[in-house]
Image 1 (cartoon, rainbow, N blue to C red):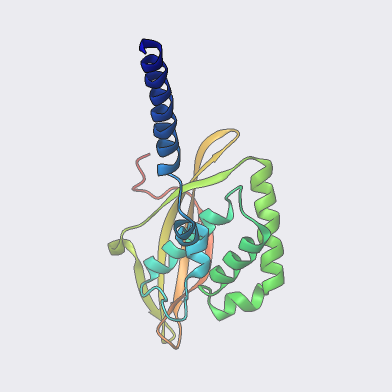
Image 2 (image 1 turned 30 degrees about the vertical axis):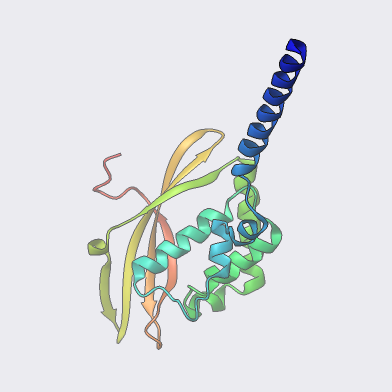
Length: 193
């Protein structure tokens, strides 16, 4: 009888251990419904309806553009998502910029730059926009313009670095701020890093 109790006790311990392992292994796994609703940053950006939900300030436009840029240089980016992200970024651009940068050319240039980044194992790790008070607004020939600077942090096989870009935006006939262009600049005078 004593052997029977010991065998039963050992069996129960094994069953309990297996049950605990199964519970712990599956408790963090997504249910099918959770898997369908989990959305990546890329998914959020490509699913965003910019016609209905367009950013309402120059800073928000450049922030969205920078989010897209950060995702474009993600090493796991598929060709399908690349095209979707490029389409979204073009919705943030002024008509003049779109005219000199047709969709196919834009896509090919973006692919080439991404390949260059991948060859250097370079990624955009984060970015910092100037605060709202630092956006420079002005009017020229009856058009409203704004400019804002962004600092992008990069990581590649040579280590960490940063690049600075100044964006110029113009308000279109629908009151939406659109990117007219940007240029790489040197560090801002108040950059203490």
